[in-house]
Length: 233
Image (tube, rainbow, N blue to C red; front, top):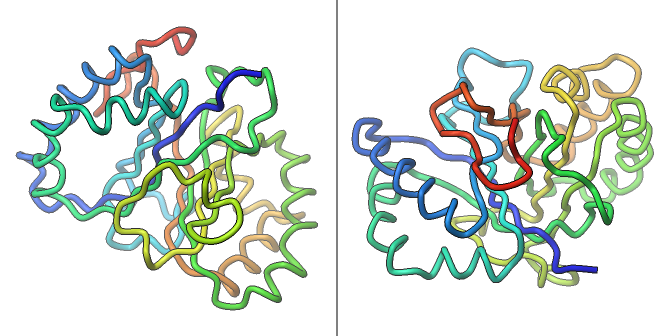
């Protein structure tokens, strides 16, 4: 069994779009050299209420996939990234988590994901969440053929799978789930049989941003397609 993949996910509020958009280009080049890349990006929060939760001030949610922890850390700590990082930090506010894919089934083909559900959450009623949420999630995952990629706590047991984070002190855990299509990801949140009930429990027992995010492809912007094999969507 090889080293697990690492995903960067989070929620960004862009404060200076003109300067911020100088950031993705060089980063994509750096990621390509590391065998990594943007595999999802959502930028239509204001116009897509069905696909978001607790994210009124968010303008961008990226998903970046790395082949392993070493590839991520090699890029994250590189002088090349240090040279462009200020373009992001100075022109946005962000909470981002870099997590090992600790739930991704062995042999899963991540190039087949057409969408993701990403969230950073803090418990407001952990006891109720633990009692009511898991069976709804299990049933909903089965209905929409969802693939659990990662669920990683920021503190305590299991937090060693949190490779790095920025501005996530307010949250308890990060979750990333893969879907075949963006339509499935949105229905997963709203479907009357399980999704709406699951969402109601989640909203009542946690707080923090969530989004259904379409996978990148060759034509959609603002981020160029992942150029690593086998992600040729």
